Image (cartoon, rainbow, N blue to C red; front, side, top):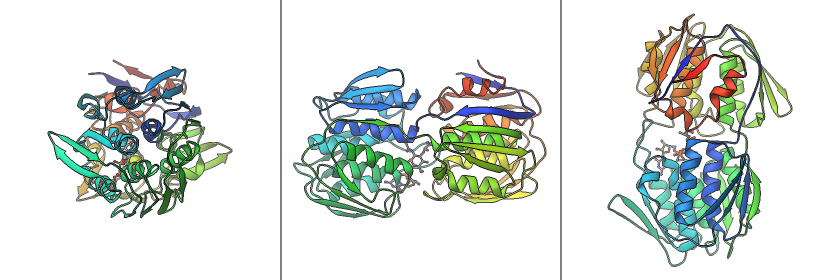
Length: 415
Ligand code: EPZ
């Protein structure tokens, strides 16, 4: 098991670059299964999750060529409509291949993804959508199977604006007969970017980014070329890192609009955020006001930045509260932050953070991707060298993190 040893810093100056979005590229790789023609995708981050998704699409029939951070993917035929357990068990969003396989071959078999550290993570909304499109859905031997001779467009209302269900139903409906309407759809930027990619392939999708998405089925999809959108969660993590110190940090390659709720909360904390084209500058004199946060589906405050923001609020002047409304079990970082001298109490889905002046160095462990990021930020604000264990979680979603932090003069070593 690898671990990080991180030394604290006094101030933060310089610039740091944001890569293509993990949660943007994964569904796009799955969507490339929808066509027999080549799809060329640029700004592909070298993340663990991306490698897993590439293994899955290769298994079902994709030919993948990599050239630096671009991929050329061609799927002349689907050889196997079953995604292997050994890969799916490593990453929940493998389930994104369900919709494309069903649309392309009329059959998709994927191991049940199961829960993870942050929640039960059911797939009922995905399956409700596939059934509405006319698929027969069965469970057996740890797999879920969806089968249909022909998919037919339908009106589908989502009980919750699930990102995963919106992506899967949108991809399945691209080649269904007639029109599909997804009501109460997820509005995340990654959904919009996926719709842009699918429309480049010849799909007819309108309304992405709103709660009503309309898909008019087409007979077939062609190849296309696309660049992955910048990772708003990576960008948010770096902005929060800047806010935790006396700083003047430029976060490069960002879409500021995608970070509105985060920027608003940072400004409420007393931090200065300046827009410079596709970059955001965070300036702080080290003082942090306490604030209250409620996580919500986009455009609300992103649950993926809840843990990193909690690390910031540990240093705030006063008491803050965080209400987590998207996932039922996303406070596993609290006990680790409390090991570093934070004072956080949990009651149900709410956490109260009593601000303190300094965090203490300690041995802590990453329990999931964003919890791990929060511990890296906390370590930079501690009173000595901190050791973070189980950093494989962090590798799943932050590309070349050590190199980027070292370029800012930060002492971080992987052992
Ligand atoms: C995506 O997960 C992201 N993952 C998550 O990021 C992110 O936290 C989440 O959206 C919310 O923004 C990827 O894009 C790969 P959901 P997803 O379906 O699609 C419930 C990270 O750190 N639900 O919107 O799984 C579910 O249990 C990861 O990068 C159902 O009840 O999220 C949860 O409580 C973590 N039934 C809520 O909806 C369903 O069928 C949100 O889930 C589907 C979801």
